[in-house]
Amino acid sequence: MAADPASINLTNQFLIAMPGMADDTFAGAVVYLCEHTDKGALGLVINKPIDIKLRNLFEKVELTLDREDLAETPVFFGGPVQTERGFVLHEPVGSHYNSSLAIPGGLEMTTSKDVLEALSNGAGPRKVLVTLGYSGWSAGQLEDEIARNGWLNVSAAPEVIFDTPIERRYERALSLLGIHPSMLMQEAGHA
Image 1 (cartoon, rainbow, N blue to C red):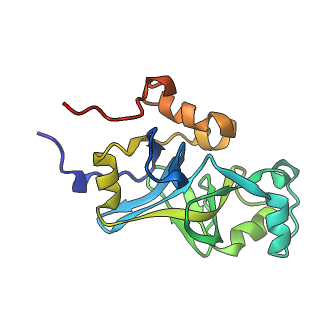
Image 2 (cartoon, rainbow, N blue to C red; image 1 turned 60 degrees about the horizontal axis):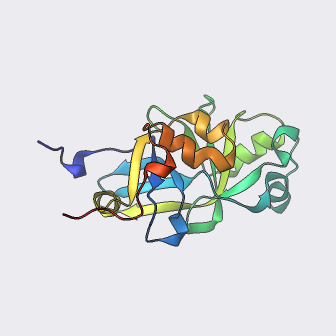
């Protein structure tokens, strides 16, 4: 008997866009799901850099960035919702920022400026991915997209986010399922 899709919790998993994704926004995307409840889902795209470096983002919020290892790191398109707002995905650090979501079994996502202030001082989390915007789904929407073969999902691996070159993240996320991109068909078969 198949599990009730509504009872499946995809928090701390990757969503991997299938070829032929109807929404161009998500074509070729890998999304890290920060939260998935019966009310909906929230995630951050981890493989679509935008034309802003962290150094520039810090200048815009009137902070200096004393972390040479991060200065030239790109900011990412996290999704089409609230694209003017920053989201910092980072390894758990044990410190508490004003607005952080601890992802069960996974990472932390912080939206308050204090994480940027910690980074600007050379402190803060060592591994970070900063996005503008997030990806959101209303109740049942994500489950419906998965049922229509829009997404594959797999348990997230932090090394894909933080240690894999951006252009290889899609392929690497698929490899967690034992799949090579060439194995995916553009259209689902119908008998």
